[in-house]
Length: 126
Length: 126
DNA sequence: TACAGTGTATTATGTAAGTAATACAGTAAT
DNA sequence: ATTACTGTATTACTTACATAATACACTGTA
Image (tube, rainbow over all chains, first blue to last red; front, top):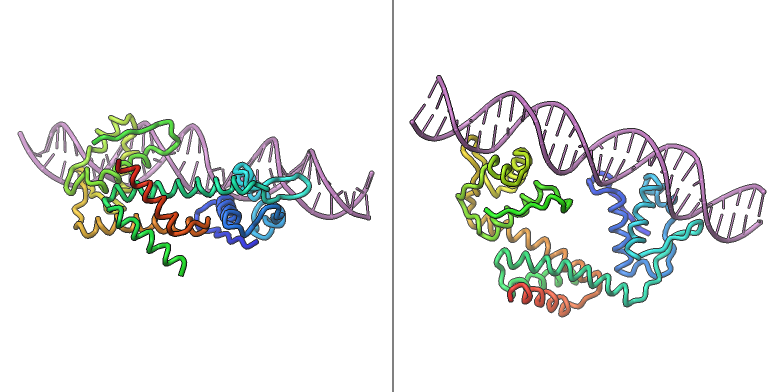
């Protein structure tokens, strides 16, 4: 599992871990049932206190993205696809709305908005 | 100048002020040369320490959205329209890119993305 | 110059965030 | 039971953030 922590970015370590793992789960690189790197291994590798990692994992658990089993390890939650789709959908709806609100506020036409988004998508896919 | 502060939202007061005034400027409700409510007046009205307001204004100044003149007051910066447009543009490009990245990560098609954004825009405009 | 308005630098205080030390608790295999 | 892994609750320390009190500095005008 590839995680990169920037100790000088100002972004809290636990948050960097949460965001990166959530990303890996949402994008499917970590799939249902996968065992995650143990709290101690990961904390050793990132040169960080185990509790910091445990805290990150706790947050992911509270999002229902993973399950913790004391004495055994951490696993990607076996969510029905329906539910993961809901999570993805909510995430996207939220950012889409922010985008639309800003577009209206700065006075872009619908056409302009769609063109800009379309262009960004094209850049990402090439 | 209509500002609403929620003391119980958890969002820092100075940030609420910054965000709301930035919004007013970007949307054009406060235009070039306008004098802003004085630090003391605004702080009295919001029942807050003057330094809290001063801090908020400082941040807006560092974004080049307003100018401070000691002993005189605060004014919306006289930016050439070109520059305000640039600021708006940068703001939007940034969020548009985030939107596109998330869309790709969760596996939406371009068509789906544009439909969702279009729908959000329609809701905002009706 | 005096004054009455501006904004501000400095300093202090209360609170929360982030991280870490330590000791504890569950599981599985031997 | 012992061992060697798992994860975790409690507690404490440090730092940063948000706000406030106070005293100061600039500007324009009578």
